[in-house]
Figure (cartoon, rainbow, N blue to C red):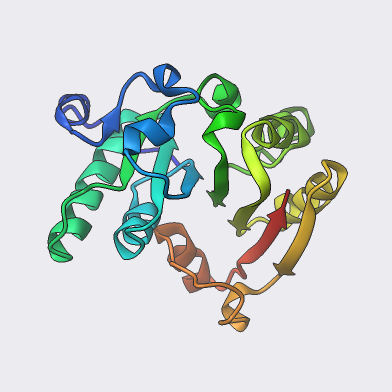
Length: 218
């Protein structure tokens, strides 16, 4: 998703107590940063933060890390987190935002971090064959995630793109994940999971596009 440059974003992020600008320094030490032993969940490609901000504020006993590569996105996510926590009359104490290239994610996490869940929402489908390796669900990426995911950890994935979804089902299976649930029409299965609708999700649904989703377990 393209977004206009936000001249204020970098300064606001650097001043934020829940933004990490040097995530590699916390590799193997994320639990120490949170100062508790709560489970750690990741969102890869958090965009404007609508999903992760709601999830984190509703679940104070879980720690969250949201990653994106674009300052403008993270700046909007930072403001969204502040908005959600203010409405809930809570301090922001269980989420960190960070800027990083997800293709190099093993520089940020390791087995000791014991990540228990990953969320991947409406990532770039990279439809051209020569770009498939850039997909966040490609086996090349899944093998990287396996290095820091806890045993039994789960990946929650949803997309509007039929090709990406069908390929991803195969990717997960080829990489040794067990697909616990999958659907080609998330709206038709309200009990599939406790869903938080993203901005993209609402847009696609309004256009009549069915949302595909799955839960894969390591």
